[in-house]
Length: 487
Image (tube, rainbow, N blue to C red):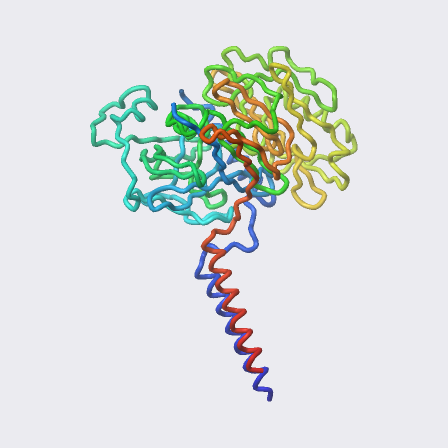
């Protein structure tokens, strides 16, 4: 009997057992990363996610030196993968990391709080969730209903308000999911240079899909136009200009998110925002498919008092009114008359195709006011469900706005792989095709210089988890070296 081999085998066996115990004990070790939307059942979850946001959109109501801000982001907009983009913020004193969905379609920043009912405890996206505890932060302050923030948000003092009552928020979405809580004020860190005291929501109760782990994050980072939004609060404090940009990388994940004036590349393809709208709405004028203008009712894109086309980074797919959706889909698939379309989950048009979709399907181009245009390639509007099975990301909105008009909403499906700039000072939005794995240059008004803002792709595993893994691998190496020295 070879005692050396027996001893080595026993030690290695112990190492494997120890490795298993470490993984089980850590609870947040993610290897491999399991994407949020995967397989046919998950497509329904994806549509429910967008429907919830649409309900929020339909129901929405109404000096100093500045610097550039580099906000680290992760995730991707691919419908069969993560299906959203998220950022990492530092909140409180001492600061703790929170992962929040980046959303240009909503206003407030909110995170789940320690006393939350039905808040998710883990996330299938692969990030470590953290509950915010106002009592554990030395800089946290309550926001009461008589304070300026609250009276401004609700256009006056709430009924029954007393100086000791907290300023509450309550949002109900289209699928019945809801988030409710109260506002607090605390330090928020966006990057190494930019931080400050901001008002945000402390989530006390979640219901519906918001309590599920399939798309769980610590909260939502709203970049809307309201005074309560992050960009508005930062601009009002004199820390930034009221301009920001994102480049969402649907190829490698993550991308670029910067606050400030983008000076390189120069985006010249711009269109004005529709005035007096709660969201980033633009005036669409026509749609081309494969170079042919789609024949549509002449008033289908009239704006006037209507909402126009909504640009929303928090929605995954792209939604067209039924009277637009049908002719656009007909023109797209006219190039492949022998293709057999199958309906998945009663809503997604899918098909089998083994060749290059960019070679086999037409380019779609949207035309907006001021001669601005946006090109969407087949590789963007078609997504691969599995080997040789593709699905269309175009969806019929099946919705009406508050005045009964059809809605058009362009989400990550259209916005990915483009540098999109939001200039709230001049009330315009612009975009250009761009490599979102590269970098942009943003003016730093404080120093007078130009900052280079590069791409980020936040790891799906937490720093703590990686640290545990590295320590454990070091332990394995040490043990193996000792075994080698013995034999």
